[in-house]
Image (cartoon, rainbow, N blue to C red; front, side, top):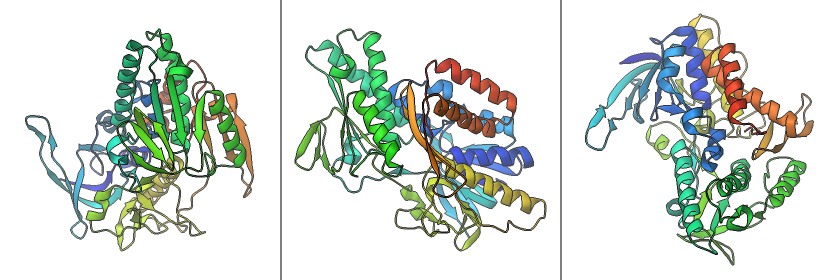
Length: 426
C-alpha cells in the first residue's frame, strides 16, 4: 500500500487537513490513518461526559468523510515508523475472538503526524489508576455511565450523595464543573426523585495555580469563579494534589471524599512518539521547525498538541484547537504549492491567538477576544459569545464536510439539539 500524503490522527487539525487536501488531490494521493472509527470535536467531550450531548448524534464517521471528501481511510493505530525508508506500520484490529484487520505497512512521500495528546499525571500516586481524563469519546462515556450508576445508588439510599472532584482549573475542568451542575439538575428532574442537585451532587474543583483559568485575563477568571460559586461548585485554588485513592483525593493536609475523579491538570504527547526514531522535546512532543517539518526530516511533519512548535518569541504554540486548525491550513498551502510546482511559502508558521471562550453549561459563557492590535482584548459573554461559538463550530463542520449547505444543516441540528445557550471555544 502506498500514498503520496499520509496524515496520522483524525483530530481537529489532522481531519481538516485530510478533508481539504483530499478534495483537491483525491483518494489516490491522500490517506488518513486513525485508531478510531468516528470523529468528535474534542472541546465537546465535557458535554458527552455530562450527558448533555449524544456522541452518536455529534460523531462523524471517518469512512463517510473519506467518501465525501476524496481521501482514503485506514483503520488502525500507528505502531512503527521507518523514517529512512518512508514506511509506516499500522497495527492489527482485534475483536474478542478474531483478527478483524491485519497489520499493514504503507509507503509515503509526505507524512503528517497529528495524534494529539494524553494526560500528564506528574507522578501523583494513584492518578492514573483512580481518575478519568477526557481525552477521547470512550473516556467521556465512561464518566457518564459511572456517574449514572452513582446517582442511581444515591437515589436508593437516603442521606447519600455523589462526590465529584475535578483536578485542574483550566478550560476543561471549569467547563465540566458547570456542565455537570446543570446536568445533575436534569438527572434529578427526570427519574431521580429524592436527589437534590446542589445538595446531593457535590462538585469540587481543585487548582494548583492562584486562580482558575490562569492563562486567560484576570477579569475572565474572576467572572468564571463567580459563576461557578453561584452554581454551588466548591473551588479551591493554590492547592496541590499529592495522592488519590478509590475514595478520596488528598491535597496538602486536606482529604476530599471522592467517588469519581476527573484529571484535567495537564497533558503531554503520547509516549509511543519517543519510539519512532524522531527528535522529541521534554514532554515528548515532536520537535518541529518553523515550517512544521520535524527537524532532520523535511518530508515528515507534525501539527497540533503532539508538535513542539516555537513562535518568534521562543515560546511553544499552546495546545489548542485553533492552533491545530491554523497549522492544518499552513500545511495545506505547503502541499498544494509543491503539487503545483510552485516555490515554498516564504514565511514560517506563526500562531495567532483569537481569544478564548469558556462554557458555563447551557445558559452562559465568558471569555476574551483578541484584537488586531497587540495586547488588545475584549471581555465577552452571553448571547454574543454563543453566536461566536456556533460560527466557530460550523467552521469546523464546513472544513470537514466541505459545503455551505452542510454547514447550514449542521447549524439547524446544533440549534435543535441545544435549545438553550451553550458556548465553548479552545
